[in-house]
Figure 1 (cartoon, rainbow, N blue to C red):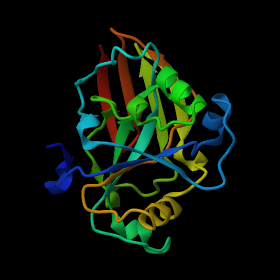
Figure 2: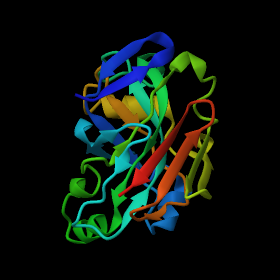
Figure 3: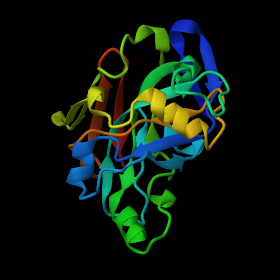
Length: 218
C-alpha cells in the first residue's frame, strides 16, 4: 500500500488514482512535436508505480528510451465530484514533487498504431513522488520553479506559471469525469527539457519551497 504523507501536519493518505496531464506546458508540447491541446489531455498511473525519495527507477527490458519529466504533484484531501473551478482549490491537501517517467520509444510506437500507452507510463517505479507540504504552505502554486538535473547537470528549469491549464480548471475538469477522493494525486505536466536517462544515472528533482527528490536509475 502506497501512502502520501504530509509530515508537517502528521497526515497520511493511501494513494488512490494518479491522474496526469500531458502537454500542459506549451514549450514541452513543441519539443515533442505535439500540438497545444484545446482541453486537458489526461492519462493515469497506478499507485503501484510510486517510489519515494532515495529509491530507484528500474527501466523495463521492453524499452530502450526512458525519459524524465519533473512535475508539480497535487494531493487531493477531500472527495470532490463535478466541483466548480471557484471551489476546486478547497479540495487540495498539499503539494509535492514528482517525476513522470516515460518509456518514450514504447509510447511513440503505441501512439503511431493508435493504441493506448499506459505501459509506457505506468510501469513499476514510473512515478517517483516526494512527501507533500500542506497547501497552506504554498502561497502561489502557479509561481513555483521546477528543476531537474541528471548527474549534476541541469536539464529542466521551468516555472508553473507557464502551465496552460491552471489548477482550478484542472481539478474542475478531472472531477467532472472521475470523482476525486482523498489520496488521489494529480500530476500537472512538465516544462521543456525532457530527455533520456540510462542505468547508473542519478536524477535530482526539486520544486523550490515544496520538496526535493533524489532518484537512481537502474
